[in-house]
Image 1: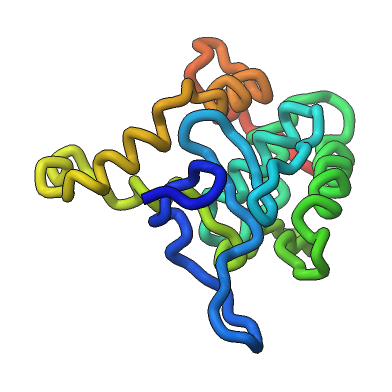
Image 2: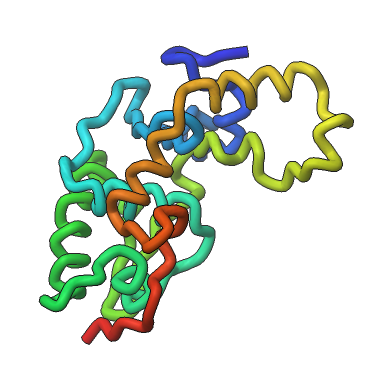
Length: 180
């Protein structure tokens, strides 16, 4: 079953409570297939910077706060000030994520996180699914997963462009990098 905009119904498992009761989440992140963000069903224009978009996707997938130093190591292997680059990216993401007054992007001097309870994430479709458990999944769930990943995955290409490695397969840093 699909919601308006072609998002699988099961992507909206986490609802937010309002004074009028339970309503659908305002933000939806699509990381399976082509990366996109929707607010109230409309596609949100994301920053042009590939590193900023990769940072957004990475933070959306993490369930706990991320250390700024770690984010700098992952996304900014530059001789200049990687913390300044991270701050710049966060200033581009705040107006998008906090547009309706709800603080979804939280950052302090040491940590950054997206409040995951305030967004719907299509990754929830495959979270916890192992190769061994695929045979036991209901057909409807398999169809939802197939529909979600049918589009070619641009998230991997965004991450590779944001942080290419020697082999082009990982965004992990090749050497320790200090973010001072």
